[in-house]
Length: 359
Ligand SMILES: C[S@@+](CC[C@H](N)C(=O)[O-])C[C@H]1O[C@@H](n2cnc3c(N)ncnc32)[C@H](O)[C@@H]1O
Image (cartoon, rainbow, N blue to C red):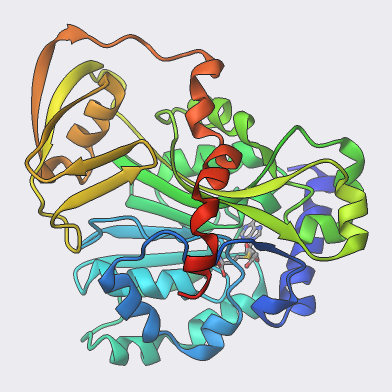
């Protein structure tokens, strides 16, 4: 990591550790509520059990609660005060485990303070959560081994990291085969001017380091992952005029994407799949992403990559998967990725903004 990258990390650390005390102190927010995607009953129940001091220092920009987490080993990249980590520690159950990694002393301290509190609230014999202080670009230095996790989550963190490739390479290394990265982050409507990257407040708010959304696709594929799937998106509103003047014509959106570590030699053949209705809280249908919702017992054809995702991930037991004869075309043109544009999806979902803001 370059000296400049270290200086950015120090600024971000000070922004979250010293300057921001509560969620409301952020100068940019998602325009829809943070709970715009329907949240499962189990997740809603878990959220009510989280200690208020943890919730008060929540700085995320989306919801990172993927389905089917029972028994999973989960890693939260940039866990902050630990809100999402604690919600997931309830959802994975006593046989699962959650590890949170964060670089900022003050936030790691808050997250660690409430481990026994939540263990009691969740009625667990032993705590199933730990928080490690470290950098997500260097998970090895934080003691995190290869092929260890079923699921990685992250909420509004990668936009704060100067070296995103290092983050995705580490994410790939520590995930098991079939494992999933499911994360919310801020994206820009275009490639950012280098001048924006000089400003410490823009870095702190995630506005200087947000990826142009199309760049995410190439980057994660280069690191070995499947094509990303876009789950949900919202527009981001910047409140401070001073920041708006600096960002100019650039627009920002929050997007939740999911992608998978697939086997190298996996077959990319189309398949006919039928959801069994067995994922907790999703008996009738499973919304996989904004383009695929699987109805219980209804067979549908999926492309080769999605077939492999369903076959090799924790979703395998929840689907009947049968090969079809034809070979799937390889998807490689960037033009084919317009369904992954968070701005377009945020426009579509915008009509429900007012309704979900009350949730
Ligand atoms: C916007 S806050 C989000 C925190 C948490 N995910 C949440 O939703 O409340 C960003 C967090 O990322 C952490 N962070 C930023 N860059 C990091 C890095 N390179 N390594 C580890 N943590 C980092 C910060 O310390 C901060 O806690």
